[in-house]
Image (cartoon, rainbow, N blue to C red):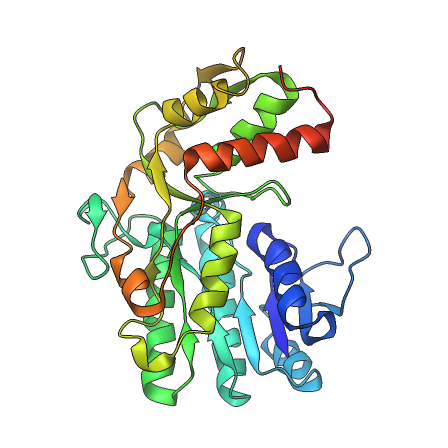
Length: 315
Ligand code: VAH
């Protein structure tokens, strides 16, 4: 049985569906801080990850053997509320690791390219390199990577994780991230033919389409542990692009699309502190990571799916 925290979030919502398709609906317990708006097709429990006792009780009651911890505040929100972010991100993670330890669960939680900082090599960022992030989110992610490694080394908990790039999807919009511009742009392009980017031209960040992110989680969790030299912070990425490059790709489908810029200094400074592109060789070598979607293929799929969702005729 699998328990997912943050199951109503950008990754959690699609991960729940995917895991239910693989392992069976009743074997995936979705949890989040509030009830879902619409009917869900499987077991759901309200869980605030700050409540360690309730997390343990739910996991024990449902006889859970795998814990996937997705509940966290993303970079921009964390920068706006750093103390709350520390308490929720680190308190929630500690509760999840303790639950996994006490119930001998396999464990997954994501790190992020946000775990790197301005002194990290920016191009083809290595798997093992300096990590001095300058955001609260980045501090949380580095601490999280170290904590998950500690639970593996000290208590033998089978912890695994990846450093996700910006993730793009059309099912559940992200909330409070820095890379979210690359999701919003598709919605705005389809709905009203223009987008004002809060990230400046020439700002490169790693990105990946959600189907590749979900496959990466399943592939890592099912990987032969004897092959894993790394554990909780595999660099994974599919592409790296700037706002003008994604705009140009959208224009191939919506020629009249108009891109404007109104830079948000806070999220721009977060983006500037992150790598331009990271190296995913370790993930490829240790558990066969591969991404199927590049910018062209992702853009075609996003525009097709969002056009159906908003029933607009592609111009
Ligand atoms: C964010 N989407 O922008 C998240 C992610 C690498 C980016 O961590 O905060």
